[in-house]
Every structure is written in C-alpha cells, then in structure tokens.
Length: 112
Image 1 (tube, rainbow, N blue to C red):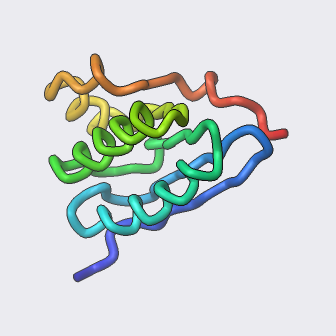
Image 2 (cartoon, helix red, strand yellow):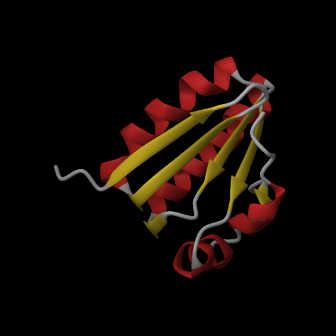
C-alpha cells in the first residue's frame, strides 16, 4: 500500500501538535492513530492540525471521531484545526462540524 501521509509531531510543555501532511484516508489511518494515541496519554491537550491535509474520506472522518471519543473518555482535551476547502466541505457536509472540537488557526497556543 502506498504511503499517503506524513505525520509531524511537535511536543510542547502544555500541549502536543499533530500535523498530518497528505491524504487522511484508509492508507493513513494507522499512521495517524499511532501518532495520536501515545500523545493522548502524555499530554492534557492534543491539537490535530488539518491544514496540510489535502484529502479526507470516511476513514479519515472516523479517525477524527475516534480521537474525539477517546478525549471525552480519557480526559484529555482534543482540538482540531480545520483544513482547506475540500476538507472543510467534507466535515460540513457530514455534519461533523457540529460534533468535532474545531478551532481556527489563530486559536493554536504559542509554543512554550
């Protein structure tokens, strides 16, 4: 299977920033979840920045929803920076914009 995504991770004192770059689809699911899950246990806040995601499919949406469900169950704060027009369209058309903790890029905290 072709690699469709790279995942950049920044660790800061108060939060972790996860930035997928490429397509958030079935081929990327395991890599994105493998980046997120250890951070969810280590940090009180995890920010998932979708600005570099070029394509989002139903599997990608499930990754976002699963991370959101884990945040509610495990007590860490998840915030998601919305992506470009195509990604935002998928999130809005599916109604997930009303369920996911979306923030604007200028709401990302400054690194410590």
